[in-house]
Length: 358
Ligand SMILES: [Zn+2]
Image 1: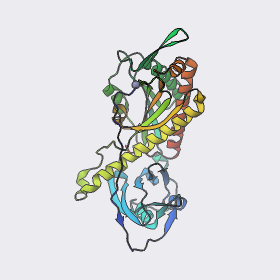
Image 2 (image 1 turned 135 degrees about the vertical axis):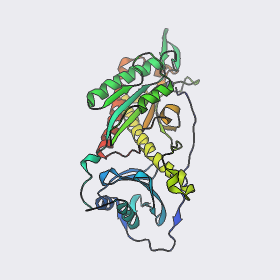
Image 3 (image 1 turned 180 degrees about the vertical axis):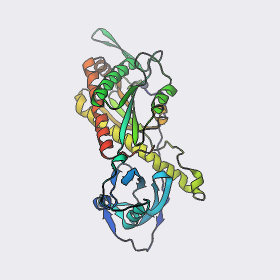
Image 4 (image 1 turned 90 degrees about the vertical axis):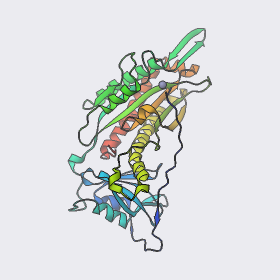
């Protein structure tokens, strides 16, 4: 059960300039572009947005526009470029010549186009924070059932702690070089602020990132409601990472630039959420249904400055879910599926060179 529920539907409108009758020039495929720039691409088809990681770790955040449309592209360090936007034609992403030239021009020096990114620019996940919801005087959701004459009390704080502890041991065994932290290890009640501080207090080296997983169990007045859900951060969340002084006279672009930085977090959170959901579907069988991916703006994750997801394991108010969550073997399956989903994300993140705004 989440503590704060604010569902927001958000649409981002980008200012766009038409290049009108100007010659549109040549365009390049993704492969040609990456080769020309010595870059790696992280592309999210859900948001039609991407991040190009150039040699040395410098990144360009962009949205796909219409063919022939110009718009803002955010380069590392808050530098703003306005150039022809990448576009999708026939389901394929293309990069206009002007975009590729601007991307190359954004680098202080580009001695040759084909050398691979520098070793030092490698990104890695340095820490994984696991947040078992509730604890201590806060039981979270509670379900009371009588099944075949036996009473079963299903308590969220206990279920999520068991899953979280097992998840921690799996992750620690797989990643001895990473810090795997729990926001609570027993039946205690850290405040929401303390949970967030645990995450934000981890000191990171250059090119290191941290991920955050909050684990809950659900409740509903409708006893038939059941199944697991994976939540990620909405694009509504805004940070003020853009230095307003730098963009005097471009006031209308500030929200767009903020949205672009935010988009990186959203993209990562969405990727991680999808990996976890896929592993749940694969590992939990059809004894418990999937309620799918959900997007929300909730406190713990909103204030954690890192890619974050929240998982609802099942409904303590549903007799079938409550029985499954009372079974240690089934809770182990949840932990294993979570572990695999996180491992999928870590593998993609680290092999792609990382794509997180920090
Ligand atoms: Zn909860």
